[in-house]
Image 1 (cartoon, rainbow, N blue to C red):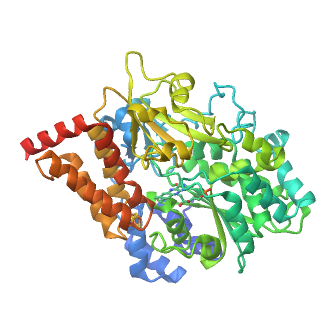
Image 2 (cartoon, rainbow, N blue to C red):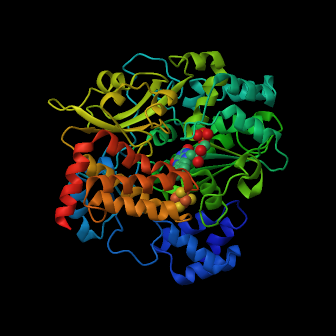
Image 3 (cartoon, rainbow, N blue to C red):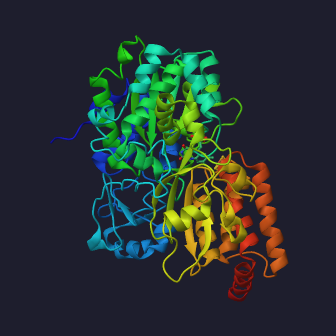
Length: 561
Ligand SMILES: Cc1cc2nc3c(=O)[nH]c(=O)nc-3n(C[C@H](O)[C@H](O)[C@H](O)COP(=O)(O)O)c2cc1C
Ligand code: SF4
């Protein structure tokens, strides 16, 4: 098949919304890299200043500026893949030009190896194979589920299978029986809060967008899922894409939005195909398009793939990325609800948040509230990985005890081992250990221990692991992914990494601790977004739970230097 010319690529995308990323991906896929002339042509075709375009393109980790050596493989060396032999696999594939990549969202099936079009997983070169996302195992606690309620039904990823399980009934009910304000009220009454990390009440967000002046309004599904240890959104999108589309359509109905984007992380190439197929099916069924289910309302939905930058999950950065700008987080206020995509009112919601809405409209807000425990509303999908016998995605009642999940649902650590620590919120919540493992899985309980549940990634470290090395890997990730917009985060993450690596810092323990606390304190109070605010939780929790390991590390570092 002949390759498209630059002009054909530009002609296809120039009239579409958010064209920069798809144009860059098309050129990159064709040539294997983004050469200078190609970028000059993009600059002309999309009327973007060349210097800005160079700055933006070089910010994304996955855009090569030179032809690749070999297959251009990327091997995950994230925290869980390191435990499972990621570094060794990288070394084994080095002759083929393989390079490391941060956590690629396959912690349930380490180790992922990505080329430009697909992901294979395995722990040795000859064991690499393309494997579909594992379906979540049936809930061992027998607890009622919300987003996983129908996910295991056969054919669920197709529109017929989805409809057979009651899919799109909530949207039909909304357009035929409810007004937008009633939909917002149902979501508000359910107590649903954002599942992407910040936990903002979804109904309040939708109300703000519905009330904000300015059109067209936009719904953005945040499927960037870059947090190490999180892989729930991939499972939802791969096995239940129509639930996410229906959630977006309900958000559009409630707020008056007429266009939407699914911003998908680059490392999920197969998921892009699943979504395109589901969108085509929904258009053919009259569910997406100019006349949603005969309601006279229009909604156009587009998939846009990121290019490998963790910060693009932060909503301001994501919106800048969609708009073809340098993906720095935006200063707030104003917030996306009034000044989002193209400075117009925009809902940004996580995949899990949106997938929760159709069951809430179908079963009612009381049903959803009642799924939680101890006064907490609803459920949360936890991505569990690391030193645990049954890793995977578990939809738990909010308020379930962490230990019940770890030991009763997921089989505990390997025989003869004990759990030394777990991470919270992927990496962003730092470590919990000792008595702090007695938490329940809800924000009030986890925040009372100085951490947070966030997007619900939990990595387990057994008693054989070096926790300073684990903290070093985590801080190095934040240093690599800091966008550099503000210096406390840009420099602080580097300085903390050097101290955790034993490359710098005082040789005396008290001075080392003071310095690390001071660096973290400045980052928490002065950083412009959640990355720089959360990163010091790694060092805070390391020092709190593992003073002996820290003392040994400082002593050894002093001897080495
Ligand atoms: C550094 C950083 C990375 C983030 N990454 C994601 C992400 O990958 N997916 C996501 O849904 N939210 C992410 N968020 C949170 C978003 O900014 C935003 O709060 C969320 O998408 C809102 O959706 P929700 O209300 O449904 O949770 C991130 C935030 C920060 C500070
Ligand atoms: S805190 Fe870090 S990631 Fe966030 S804007 Fe500042 S430099 Fe960028």
